[in-house]
Amino acid sequence: MNKFQAFQKFAAAESAQIPVLGFVFNLFLAALLSFLLARVYVAYGTSLSNRRMFARNFVMITMTTLLVIAIVKSSLALSLGLVGALSIVRFRAAIKEPEELAYLFLAIAIGLGFGADQRVITVVAVFIIVCVLILRKQYHGIEGHQNIYLTVSSDSGKSITLKDIVEILGKSCKTVNMRRFDETKENMEAAFLVDCEDIDKLQTVKTELQGLDDSLRISFLSNKGDI
Image (cartoon, rainbow, N blue to C red):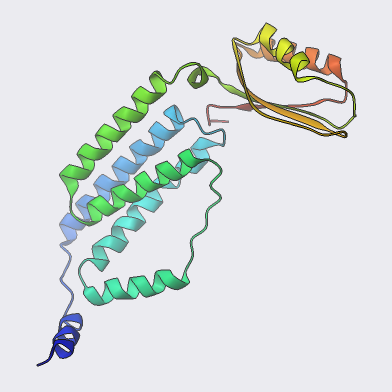
């Protein structure tokens, strides 16, 4: 028997049976860890998008990854078939910020770990990573406490300087961090991360900004991810 025939015999061999109880236990642990990861992302993430909505995908992604790995690892033929399937199927997601991609990779890593029956190392690694994420949030500095994403834009052509906007924000907000500023002859748009104590401060900011130009467009977005 040559090497090619031996390989064919090995590939055609019956797949190893997956222990049902062990698989269900891994599935339960994966769902639990991915749920906790979602809660951590909502509470400690810094993404400006709706984090609660995005985090709902973590459990499904983790459990699906576990299922694929558990099935593929039991058969060489299935693993080769997966490579062929992934070469024609492309997964696309609207990733707006790098942090979202990092959490998706972590959710997939949890599924990979439990799919490979590496329970202890997966739990320990996730625990350490989550602790690092929480500590990073706690000691991230001023930006970590900013809770409002503010966008100011105008198409009226009036001369509104960046200094005018920052001075108004500085009077009512604890901290002001400019994220983007675009200006042309026809329009202007500025984006800030600010820390405002209450709704009255936001109302003051809105009123004073509109005093610069009554056609000014102002948008407030919570940075807590739970709108």
